[in-house]
Length: 115
Image 1 (cartoon, helix red, strand yellow):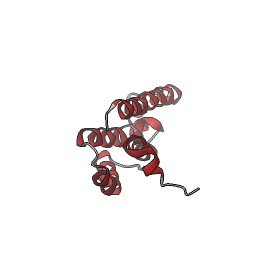
Image 2 (cartoon, rainbow, N blue to C red):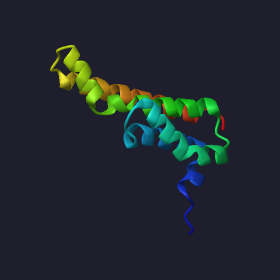
Image 3 (cartoon, rainbow, N blue to C red):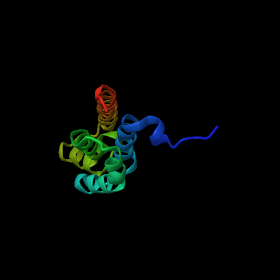
Image 4 (cartoon, rainbow, N blue to C red):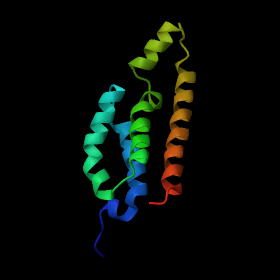
């Protein structure tokens, strides 16, 4: 049995989910830089799949903004310092919940959209 590439099996729905996860967990940095890297990395596939731009904008937004909630970065620690807070545990719980629900939103949008 010949195996197909994952993108052929999952189509645009799986592409949307995987590209979001790559953005959240695979690319770090300033949000604009992350968006640029994600966009340039996946643009050939976006064009090949004729992927809707409003959904691609969602992928770029979630993939670049939620990174700072998924795990603590200098931004999170800096904001805690300004607030004179030492409660990293609550920040981590909050960040993980935000990440889970936001990624779930992308998954739901991927399956509800008629590609």
